[in-house]
View 1 (cartoon, helix red, strand yellow):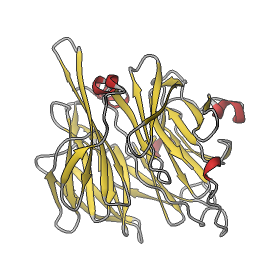
View 2: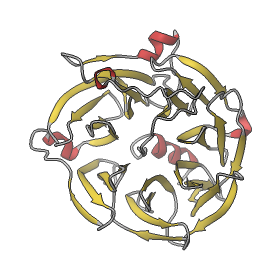
View 3: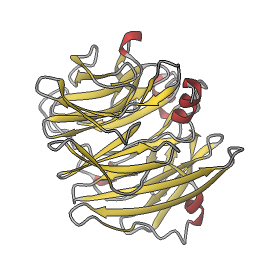
Length: 371
């Protein structure tokens, strides 16, 4: 597989994202707790990835508690007077700020609660292009395609505090105790072909250096990670580019197969919400997709169906690109894409009832952050 074709897969039909819980904290900017307590003021920021090299990434704001509900389209452009740029990659809320990584345009931005840029860091060429985000304490962490994870102090992101050298083309990252778990994906072999990196990097957050690499002779091309209580789940691409899950045991240094999912949401209740988009391509690259949703009790390992799709049968064959939760209400947000036209968002309540459905302002909605 050539590098060019790998890039198409990563940014197109097989891109993964990971959703994890981010708790409001008081270490961002000052020591005042700025958590929003009035649920009627909560809103969902929806990042639309756009198309590679098309400069059409957007940030929408959905108001689920208004009567009626409504969507503000392309808010980033409205409040900042400029576009996001090329390929908005990830978005998290931490404290009362949003953090946005933009892969193609190569920057990290810190936004206020209206989506206005407070501060921005432009990554240098040797630092790599930013991918996924995680946060803990007073720091935000960014994986980059320079084989690094960058560490930023939330009081100012004008420059990284430190870099940790990890594996090749790291993707999803998540904090587990005093460790940062890093999913390494692809590297270029001596023949110029893309091959899987078979290492999950474990970064010690105290020293911000590698504690260990967990290496597998069987698995590789890791994509996303979710931490649910004491359990760590990793997704990876198989050689046929289906997506499956592994249990990671840091202490034992083992990776154990545990089913299939393309999207994961970690909850504080000890459950893992999953979407599995199983897409098969024929010799002409015509796709057949079957999509399912389930919830795993990590204590028992039991999977149960998550949604009744009788009201939304189209989701059974849709490419789910966004899969996120409102941690206050437990409402579920699902976004679909065809990689050509504006995406569609489905808003379900905690009981699985469809509350709303609407079109986004651009292609491939990839993240919903509600705060």
